[in-house]
Image (cartoon, rainbow, N blue to C red):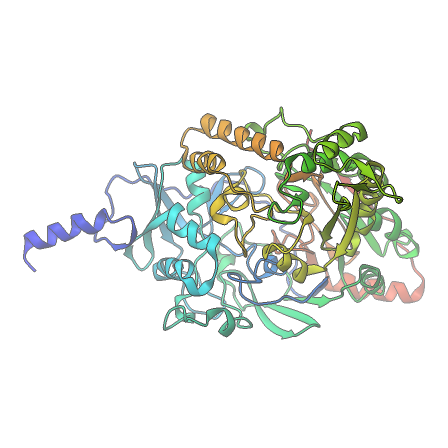
Length: 601
């Protein structure tokens, strides 16, 4: 190849952003960032070792993290917490090194350049390289993975990758974004290309259903017994400990996840010493069950930690494609029939906050003018009358002119929620609305929601760093196996969401967010329920936490529901002493810690 051809090729490949390109030289004016002066947040007193025993309420339907049935609660243990390119400091909110040791912003506000930590390894020992980030696009864009949300994201949000060498590459956003938003979009997890030597096969979903991929984090799936348990084990000499921000974290050697479907049974396992920690956000557990001799004698300690984390959307989600639900007046009547304040006061002991809109805690992105519909029987009567349900049967349930009862089915996913939805059911009868309750537990229940088989669903979702709307309300997602649980579809909303996603100016983006939230509220297809701005748990006294208990963003201080920051540890000597004391009749001071320094207003 002559010099002219070489120059043309270099220019050409350096500017191919759509898809995959190989460039020969990096721009020479990049300002590389390492941000390595942020404060450490793990406890230097943490000890390594031990097996951490917790429970899950249902056995996972797959070991995949992408595709059908993968978006269940178990995925939080095999994906969340694993290093992506960068990690966000949980107190300062600044980005700090993870898989990438340095990064630099391109001048186009669409590109970030990354230099990988050469010591980064998959849990099977193979090195993590630029090729694993290129392979993400093959993986996510493949029809065989059957993951429409990811396919759209890696097509219409991330334009592609340019590779410079084994450890250096650039990722490109489709549209220009402010630096922080660009980091959020391009801070991706790699996929192990060597695990798929022939690419993504057509039978990917079936073939890899029970084959857990290697990951970038400290734990791998070591053993599963279907229906019984999953065991995670830490790899030897995990590469992450070379990074000061990962030191003194993920301290236990093994995590044993025992399947216990009934909460009454699971807490008995905990109090018998067969589980080490127990998630206690539920008020009925914290106030009613987490008490007695073991707590009074200091063997089990309780922690209530308030945080500053954004709150995901929680509510009663109405499926617009289901029977009756396409009637706007009927939906408005349902909204005024749900006595959410009473549910919070009675069953939730006033611990939770009544959420007013679609998520909360996002600052200027929240529409402060949006208010949840009040429980108001006169307004419920008005809208049900307009919807045609203007008479009552002998049971006090409304009828339309065809004699059809005003009855809806509310699907919920946890037995723990039964008292909550029962309050809603009983109060709704006062408005002539019959709510049939349908408990479909755990992963199976969430699958039914993804498949849009519900009429109404009592559901809460996780919260990102900024509000997201495309997955929930864009018409492209109004189909099975997506998070558009309401089947909402509107060209006007599509334009707002697309404008929100592509907006560079922060104030304009916040304005689009407020307009979107206003349209969601007007639709009454997601009736807000509550937010939970704290983490709460109990643990045996040999399970230790930092003196600060958690961080500003800690949602699960004991990683009992997800792999979060891994700040806790097991004191093996203390464990022996605890067992000995339990047998001898010795007691310790009772401990209930409540930490409010991050309390949200």
